Image 1 (cartoon, rainbow, N blue to C red):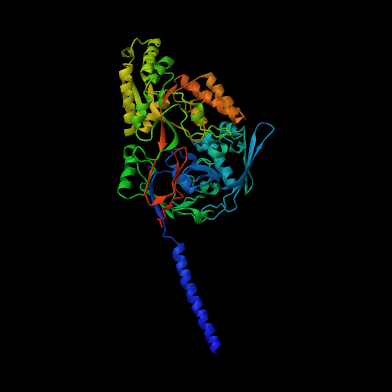
Image 2: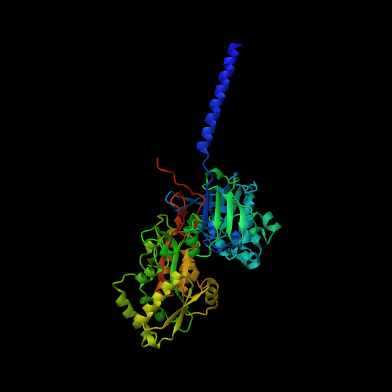
Amino acid sequence: MQKAKRLLSLLLSALMVLSVLSGCSGKEEKAPALELRAAVCPRIASLDPAMNTERTEQTVFYLLYENLLRLSDDGTGCAVPDYGVAREYKEEPNYDGTVTYTFKLRSSANWSDGTRVKAKDFVYAWRRLVDPKTESPNHAMLSMVKGYDTVRKTGNAKALAVSAENDSTFTVTLSAPCAYFLNSVCTAVATMPLREDVVSADKEGWANSANLLSNGAYQISVWTADEFLQLRRNENYYESKLIGADMLRLVFAADASEQLRLYEEGKVDYIADPPRDALVEDGTYLPRSSTYCLLYNNVSDLFYDADVRRAFDLSIDRSAAATAAGAGAAPATGLISTGIESGTEEEDDFRTVGGELCAVDTEGYSERCTEAVECLKRAGFSSGRDFPPIELLYVEGDRNYDVVWALQRMWSEQLGVSVLPRALSREDFDERLASGDFEIAADEITADIDDAAGFLERFSAMGPENKIKYKNETYEVLLGVAGASENMTARAAFLHDAEALLLEDAALSPLYFDTVTDLLRDNLQGIYHDHLGRVFLKGVTRVEAAA
C-alpha cells in the first residue's frame, strides 16, 4: 500500500513538472502576433492579375497569389527566382525550333479554401490572359508562347500551346527560345493561376471581393474599399509557418506625401515610396529598371528632323537633371538602366557591358552645346530664336517639376529656344501621347520584364507602345534577329546594337536612372525588392534584441 502511494506521488510530481515545463516551453516558442502596417499603393479597385498595370499594386498581388516560380530573398534584400507552385521543371528544345517546358506542381500547393492548385488553373489563367475578350493590357506577356498570334486573330483561346496532362503537370510550348521566360514570365503577376469556377460564378465581382480566393502566403480578412486591405496568414499555404507577419494592414495612400504623413503619425510601420526630399543622400538606394526620358514626336513638323532632336539632346546636362530629380537619381548613360542582366550565361549587367551611350561628363558639356547649335543650323534654324515656342508635357508631381524646369533653363540658355513645361494628370498625359498631340514630353520608361528587350521593344514600329512613332528598318531587323536567336550571347549583342542605333537617331533622350528606396521601423526587418522596383513583404519579422 505504501509502495502504491509513493508511486502515485511520484507520478503526480512528474505530471506537475511536465505541466510547468510545457507552459514554459509554450511561452518561449509562441511569440506575440506581429501585424505589419504598410502603405505601398493607392486604392486598389481590382485584384484580377490579368488586369494589373501598376507596379506599386503588385506588392499586394505577390502577397495573395503565387506563380509557378516565386521571387525570394537572396539574403541581401534582393529578389531572385525560386520554385513556387512548381517544385521542378524540364526544358526540352524541339526539332522545329520550339521549346517545351514541363512544370511539376507541388501536391501541397493549395488555395485558401483548402482546394489543391492544379495545372488546369494555369491553363485557364494563361488562355484567359491572351483571349481578346478579356481585354487584358498584359496579353503580350505571353507573346512567345506558340499559338499566341492565332488566339489574338481568331479569339480561339484553346490555340495557345498550354496544357494540363494531369493535376500536377503543366506544359507550355514556346515558338522560340526566350531568355526571360522563366525569370520574368513565370514569376509575373499577369500569369498567376486562377480558378475557372470562381471567375465564372461571379464574372463582375470576384476580383473585388473580400472573399477572394488566394493561393499565396496571405488571404483577405477585411477590404474597406477606400481605406485599407487587411490580410491574414493563409493557413493553407504550404509554407504558412515560415512567413513573417501574422497580419498585414495595407493602408491606401494617394501619393508619396500621404505615405510619409502616415509614417510620421505612427499609423504605418513601412512606406514603399517616400518623397525624395525626405531622404538622406547616403541612404540605401537599389537599382530599378526605370529611366526618366525626354520623348520626341518623331513624326511631328519640328522633331521629324534628327538634327533637331540631336540639338535638344546635346544641350542636356544630365548631371544637373539627375540632381534636380533628387536623392537616388543617377545620370543616364543609356536607355537600359543598371540592374538588368545581359541575358548571357555570364549574367553580366547589360548597362555595364554596353558602356556609356549618353554623355554625362560635365567637362565636355560646353563643346556639346556648341555642336547642338550647329545641329539646329543644319536643320534650317539660324538660331534658337527662329525655333517656334513649344510645350514640354510631363506628369504632374514635385520631382518631375524640378527636372523639366531644369531642362527648360538649359535649352533657353544654350539654344535660345522657348520651351514651356506643362503639367498634366497621368490620364491626360497618356491621352495626348496616344493621339500624337505633342512635340516633346518627359516620362518614365520602364520594363515589365528583367531583360533589355522590355525597354527596346517599346519602340518597335509595330508596337502599340511606340508613342514617339520611331521607325528604322535596321532597328526592326536587330530586334527581330535578337528575338529569334538561340545563342544568348549573340542575342545580347543584337540588343546592344539596337539600343545604340535608337540613341544615335536621337529618337529619345535618357535623362536619369531611378532607384527604389523605402522607410521601415528600426524594430522590423525582412523587406526585399527586385530590379523592377517591386516590394515584397511576406518575410518581415521583428529585429531580435541584442543579448
